[in-house]
Length: 178
Image 1 (cartoon, rainbow, N blue to C red):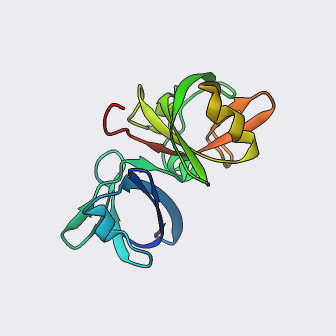
Image 2: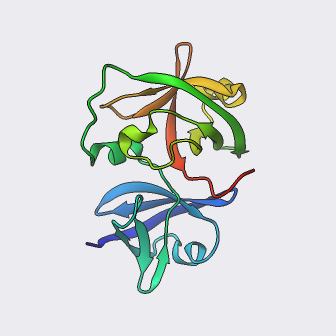
């Protein structure tokens, strides 16, 4: 069943569009390819529909369809699915490298265990989006960290650096090898 939505903002992040939409009155964040048909469809204030097809869903207007390759709003994504039975704060080692950065975000590519706990399909090779906050700066350069999953609260996934917590802002399926 399509959900009426509208595009709130669109920011290009390397080969991706970082898109915020109002979906059924709630904010949602998606990452799409920065090419047609997504580029033409996703304009600020444009009305679109979200259709729950495939692993992430799709955005459409009439016959024009844009299939997202990633998600933000990770707490909302986690909360709309059954909660897995896990112990307190499962944690594993994540291995990654910097793939892209701008003034606001860094995108890391690598192996991030535990993402399947929110039904994320890209288990072995995933891109993660981090805000470039002070807590995240050292982790961006490090190439290895601990990833932790939380069944409740605003941040389902965080990378840990001692007592610093760097929340994951999004997950993207990589399109190819680099």
